Length: 248
Length: 248
Image (cartoon, rainbow over all chains, first blue to last red; front, side):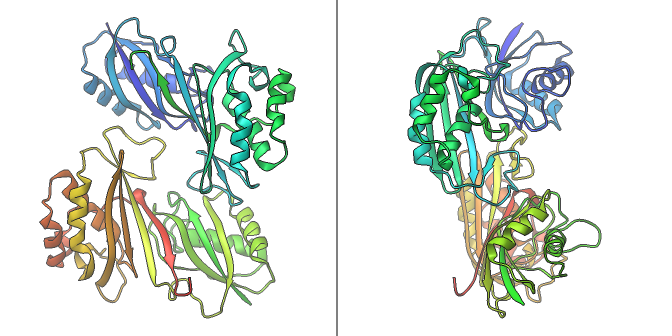
């Protein structure tokens, strides 16, 4: 039995989410079925993060145990062939020790949120960004974001469906910058609550539009109340970018 | 009657091409029908370029004549509302003189071709780039490309369906560069033959893979024979980027 760490890239659009769901297609189901087609084995995929419906990944780390012998290259090629036509690809693969766990060994996660700030509807970016028509002040968003960095009770920014035991999380970085029409938000933490990034981005967008003043972000945090949330940004603009492990 | 110049962004995926076609949806048909819905007028759209099925535009310039009074802002908003759910958007609009013609006044066109150079299939980039598994030497591609710059008979790089009167064209720029997994080809000319960019990119990819040596690109050009063409790159990676006019 060999444990393989796979790096997945996927378009979250067609999926109910990363985790297997009773009521629709998931990234997990597609990958597990592809591996079954390749190996004849029923495996369980474990992932660094559990992304929602419509959320994308540039490099999600997952692991599976496989009994049949494969080189990482051959396994990657075979899984990718069986994943078609689903918009999921294995972009890296390596053997890892049996105690390496994609979720429990992970010590850092990074997300990117992409906003296209213009009046015109999206075409090529549809499903891949959040279109915000009102001009956003990205510098004000960045300043306001700093109130969220550090160790806090993020109850305000937590979905009612969140399964985490504690709302206490340490946010290491929340940077906002503009590149032309794009406003990019980058968030780093050891781990995030369910909907945390989308909830934070939603409130920052209100600041960017001038509907909230900068201090209201910190006030919403201090309220520790989901009712204090201004806006939950849509999944389309959210990308799981990176999972960090101690030995890497 | 006012002539409006519109700048269109579109995802070419669902269309048979920019020009109206008898056998399927086109960008022209969608825009003309949106304008009819807005104004009640039957207009004819003229465009700087006639892109093929699957080819995208970041900023295609077109013009239409409209009798009813509109500000550019109101016209843009109204057309965009009627274009939904087609992946076409008016991203700029201005009044232009009656003798300004999107096609005949245009003195320069720029295209971008995007190659994703990796073994893994595309996910988020599907339909938006050409995936080439074999490693490409982008520097060799750039060097080989320079044989095509200048005034030449581009018969080799011209579709059999090309309607241009002459195969003589002046290519002002053909630059190839790598950005991580991406290999980007940028082409500037006053005008291009049908399939010219895709034909040039196909041959450059052969050089990048090492299947052609650099000198073969110039030899293919000198052959002035479509049979000398190595490969026609798929439409997915091609973007109409810019149209240039004398007064701009």
